[in-house]
Length: 216
Image 1: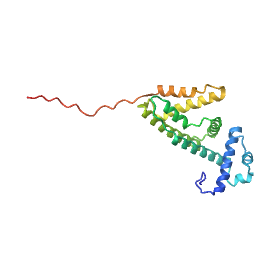
Image 2: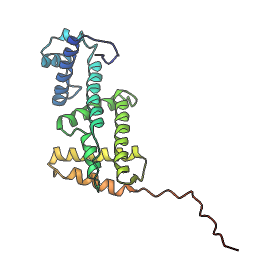
Image 3: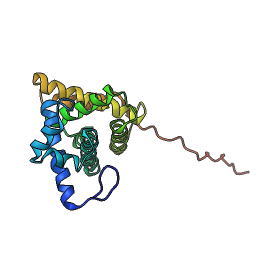
Image 4: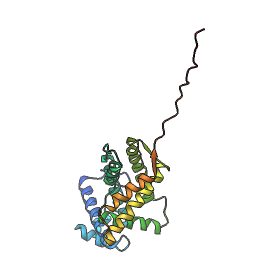
């Protein structure tokens, strides 16, 4: 197994790092990224402070490892998501939702990491690169689903994916804060796809109609 620097590490150290990543994820959700200390992470994982620093140089390096772990699981979810043939947008919506983990822990975690990246003014950093890659992967998935319905986006596929992700995040937030109806997310996604896509226009024929011939 390789760490975030591409260096090979032993299976034992990999297990230790995995436990620290899991502990950090739990505490980041519970307390926030900034408020969580190295000591708390080590204690949550059942290790000493020294064990932490023998695996990570600081909390920032661990944050990167947490993001890598999340990005790998999401990338796998996108790879596994398939658009089942349907007569409406339900197949596209199902595939989109399959690629977006919806648990409150995940939602809180990713918002914490996004806020940290914004506070640090690092738009091209690890989180920014992950966000770009995630959007590109999801855009391909959505485009494939729309093509199976004979439809195409009215805007750039990446822009449509940003809109869908915005709808997704807003609906999840509404559900967590005020108990929005569980079907609201699907309804909003279908409505968005309905109004922001169109049937694929048939390509104009390149075959010229032959001139009529008349018998002399």
